[in-house]
Length: 434
Image (cartoon, rainbow, N blue to C red; front, side):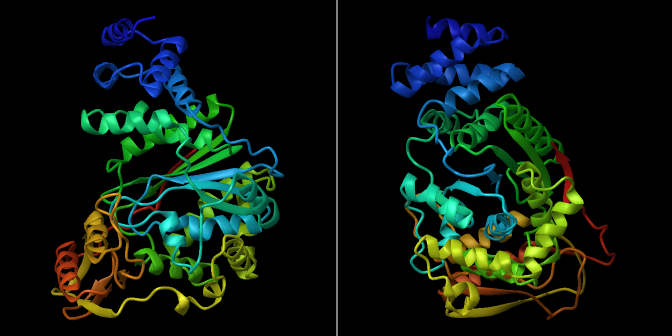
């Protein structure tokens, strides 16, 4: 087999076979097929698209390009959750203890953030001492004992995807639905869960800004999961404004704790219940969504989800006392209000700009080497649909640098738009695909 022939076949719009896709992924991972040929193939894929079968073959080839985690030693049906990311997206921090408290084991691999806020691992490191550097044995033992464990992604997990994504990033071939879906799902399948629940964001603060693109991506990933023999469901949710009120690592942890104490923001609670109900259905401990939502609400009401979070943090060397006393979490030295310059209804928030404000303060990474300040961020007081008067507080900036605080404040004000009329309420859950 020759790479030249594989490129030619796809350039001409023909369907690649499993053998041809396995050949190119294996060769590229080992370094026997050069970047320039794979670049040519990616451009052909970008314009000619991939069929459902090709997308499945590509996903499985990338998943099997490295280590495939064997989680068979974990009791029960293991359910993983993945989000395509957004502003204020702290969902895993509250959702995974809720699901584990209901009896569904969560064995999750997460990464660090690159962009406006930290990833799940960065946020969890707000708990002093917390570590995700777990051995395989400890990871499995923690899930069996506590019901939940989160570890960092290993270098051996879907290495072909890492190489391929880096190449696509510099050859303008990222925005292809099959390539995006196979990139996400190859890592999820390699991570070994029995079922996968996806939170696909759409809107100004999301990777997929147009709802139809988010739905198409969700459908593509659900097909891949189904073809791989995994229960897979996708929730398409709104990201035209930050999720909840907190944006920033330790601030988001505090909001997740508030949620497990029964005091969470309505939109965040609704998303957790929607995603969580799918996870309980996947774990086969509930017969319908109503029963699942009731179970999830019960573990909030009786504080068993909060206790589960403390057990999880302690099991990974973190200071669990911060779960019960959030004042022990990192705190910024400067807390200043952002005052509205206008009267009127908030009609629109440029959501990604709020994320950039957090980045300016030091809450995110501009490069992989950047250090995150876990204490900084923003607490929103007003969101879309709220009426405000000039001089009223829109948000509080949490900072450790006066100059950064002023820069973030100005950018924040520029991200808010006002109207004389109250805007129509936007649906948080756009659609569910399963």
